[in-house]
Every structure is written in C-alpha cells, then in structure tokens.
Length: 177
Image 1: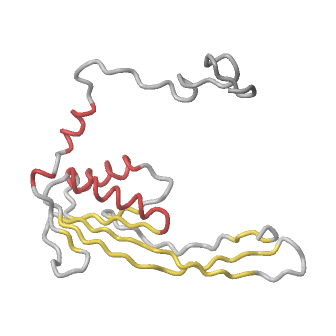
Image 2: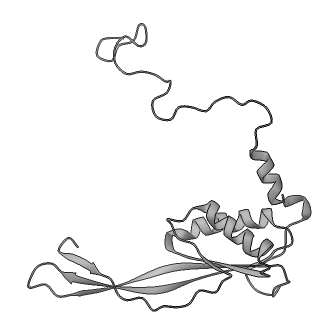
Image 3: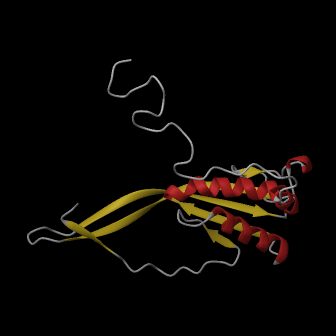
C-alpha cells in the first residue's frame, strides 16, 4: 500500500442528537463521563446514548460501567452490530488502478435511561442496587487527601538497578560470576 494514498471521502453530515455521545479513541474518559453526568443530572435529559466503532468499543464499555456506578436508577440497553466502510485509494505511480477496499467494522450502542426501557430487549440490564452505586460527590471526596500521602515516583529513571559495573558488589555484566 506504499504506492497508494487514501482519499478522504466527504462524509454525509448526519446530525447528532444532544443526548448522543460518540466515543472516539482520542477522547478522554473523564470528559465523556463528565458530559454524560451533566446531561443526566443537570440538563434534565432522561436518556443518553453512547456510540462507538472499532477500537473505541473497549473505552465505551469502561465509560458505561463507570456511569452506571455513579448515577443511581439507570436502565441500560446495549446493542452491538457492524457496518461496512469503503476506503478509496489513489495510486501514487502511473500505471496503477485506483483501489476500493471495504472494511467490516464493529459498532456498539449503549442507551442509559432514567425511565424503564424494554425489558424484553436482548441487551437490557436493570439498574444496579443502591449499595453498588457510589454518588458522584463521594468519588470527589475520595480523591481529596485526608492525611499526608507518600509522594509518588518521579517517573522515568527514579530508583532501581543501575546498569554497568560497580552498581552491585560482586556482580559484573562482562566478567565471570
């Protein structure tokens, strides 16, 4: 494929509903959770929909689990599917024909609702029990240090076994043991 370059196709502008959140691999989990909780708790939405494709599906599942453990009484329906995406590739050298490659991409849709959803749906999950939900303000309090904590490591480097001779008595990388 080094003799081709992918051509960007104009995407059909499908409007996104205010309560729909499209998860991408680049987005930050914290931002998605904040937006979802804002919609449900402050803006008065009764329902939110998380959507993702491909590699963003793992992140979407994590976000869904975190949301339902922070907000009580959320009904959930999860549906999975797939779609075909066609990529156009233009040749960089003369004599080659343009390519059209179709990929089969997985999708997930997670719907959360304060109102009861269709319980007969295959992907339905009832709200968690009250003792399994930890309200948002309790998470914030957990992050506040109550007592002095040990400082964390300094990142790269830090302490650890050094390399080379002389760092450990009786041990040498190039000599005999």
